[in-house]
Picture 1: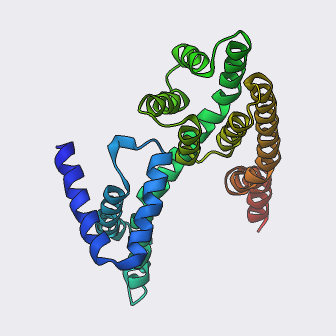
Picture 2 (picture 1 turned 180 degrees about the horizontal axis):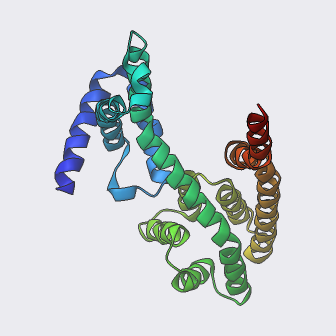
Length: 258
């Protein structure tokens, strides 16, 4: 069933890509990069994701339009010419919803890799300074690494080396594939060290420190943004309840005096 669904979405995406002009072809290239960065969930690629977007854009307005039309409070949305705008809005939401899901997967994957990367670099540094070559150190680290996006990417990196790719090419491909700035920085440093013949131990240790510093800066930024993000729930949920508790007795007393 899943295979049939993927083939169906592939057919829809292929037809749209072929007949949609340069705009859709460029969109498929963007989707390909995003799907790869998300770890290729369910084995889909950009063309399949385009098929899912088109299907969702068709189903979404009918599904939600049917549901909302039975809720009296939303009757005004389906009366008069402005209902066209409502359906256009639902079509747009349906089209971009699958891509939003992929972006959420990318964000979660990047967070997981960012958390694991400093420890992996530290272990790699210890192994290299203990006398192992880069590939031996990497295999040791990957064998002791828990399952996750970073281990998956490192396994893929080693497979590329076993297939005959140079270390520089495999590192560059991994950095582009993941799309994470911290990993790009580490890959660039390793590529530069290989070109100059520099020892890997100091380079890895410096990169580990830099990654930890950037992770701390991101945490500080998130902490500073938390107060601003809390304002909306406070205004919508907590403040009205507080106002009701404070003002309700006063209003009831005033109504009683009238």
